[in-house]
Image (cartoon, rainbow, N blue to C red; front, side):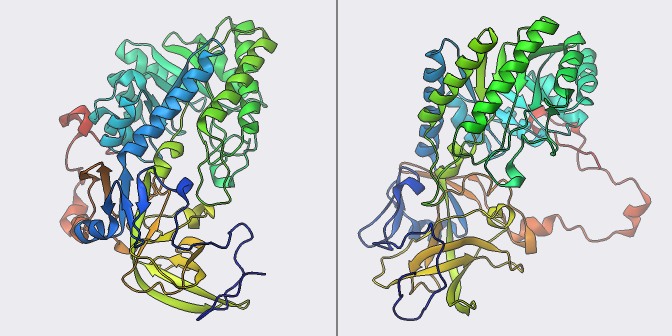
Length: 498
C-alpha cells in the first residue's frame, strides 16, 4: 500500500517502481547532468547559475544545455569504444546521431571530441555543413532519400550513404556517375532482432520500414547489386535495432548476424567489407526504474561479440562504428517550466494532484508518443510539505498532454513555482511543434560562467510570419519558393519539393 499522505490527498497508488522519497527535495544525481545541483534552500542550479535567474532572464519553458556534460559524454563514448576495440585488434568510430538533437554548436562540440555526425535529412546535412564538420566524418541515412539529399551528400563529399532499399541503389549510382565520382555506400540490413523497447522505436524486426531483410534474402541480393555497380564503393554493412535499449543481447545477435553476412559476401562476391556499423540506441536513465549499461560496459561486451563472430566465421576484423545520440544529448539538457495551476482530481481509486505547466506536448511529445516516463523536481525552493504523487501536464487541448506521468513532489506545489524535468535533450526539441500555435522554447547553453542561446526561442510573431492569408491572385500563378536552391550557398539550400 502507498504511504498515507498527510494534508490534502489520499492519492492513487503510485507505480510499483516509484520509490517513496526520503527527501522529496533531493536530487537523484544519476538523472541529471554533471553540473546540476541544489542550493541549501532547494533551488536548482547549473554550473552555479540559479534557475530562478534563468527563468527571469530567458523565460520559460526553457531547454537548458550543460555544455561541459555533453562534451564529457561524447569524449567518454569515443574513448570507451576506441579502447575496447583496440584491445581486440581493430578500430571503432563514433557518429553522433543528429536526430536526437542537432544544431551547429552541438555539431561543432561533438566533432571536437572526435565524433562524426549521422544525418537523415537535407536539413541535418546543412547543419553539419554550416558547422564546418569534416564531410568525410558525416553519414546520411533515411528510408526515402530525396534527389536533393543525395546530390548534396555527393557534392559535399560525405563519407557514407546508407542505402535503405533496392530503389536507392541505381539512384545513388546514377547521381555518382553524373558527378564522375564513386559514392561510398553501406547497406542497411534488417537482422530480425526484437529489441526490448517501445514498438515505435524498435527498428530491426521484419515488419517495419527500415533496411533490407536478412531473413528473406533481400539483403544479400542488394549486396550483389551494389557490388556490380562501378559507381558505388561498397564500404560496409549497417544495422540498427532500436532505441532506449538497456542490455546488450539484441546487439549481440545483430552483430553476429551482420558478421556472418559479411563473411558470406566475402566468400561469394569476393569483397572483404572494411566496416560494420551496429547503430545506436543506447539507453539512458530517465527514472529510478531504468538500469542502462555504462558505455564502457557496452563497449567491452560488443567488442567481445564481434571478435568471437569473426573468429567463428574465419573472417578479418572490420572497423566497427556506432551511432550514439540519446546517450550524449539526453542527460545534458533539462527543461524548466513554470507552474500555472494545480488541481486535485478524483480518479476512482483515490485522488491525484495535477500540476499544469506552461509547456507540454509541443516541447516534449515523448510521453504521449512512446509512453515515456520522466522524473522532475521542484526547482525554485525547498519545501517541508509531505510528498504527493503528482502528474505534470501541459497546456494543450489534449488529455494525453502529459509530461511526467507519476512523480513525487511536495504537496504544496503551486502557481509560480518552477518545475525542472531532466533528460530532455534527446528528441524533445527535435520532435517539438507549434501545436495550438505555441512557440517552441529556445535552447540555452551553459558553459561555466558563460550563457547563450544555441537555438533561439520562437515568438508568436515567428508563427504569424508564416501565415500569409489568402491571396486570390496567387492561385492563378505558380507560387514559387522565396529562393531557388541554386542561388543559395550549399549550407543555406533547402528543399523546394512540393
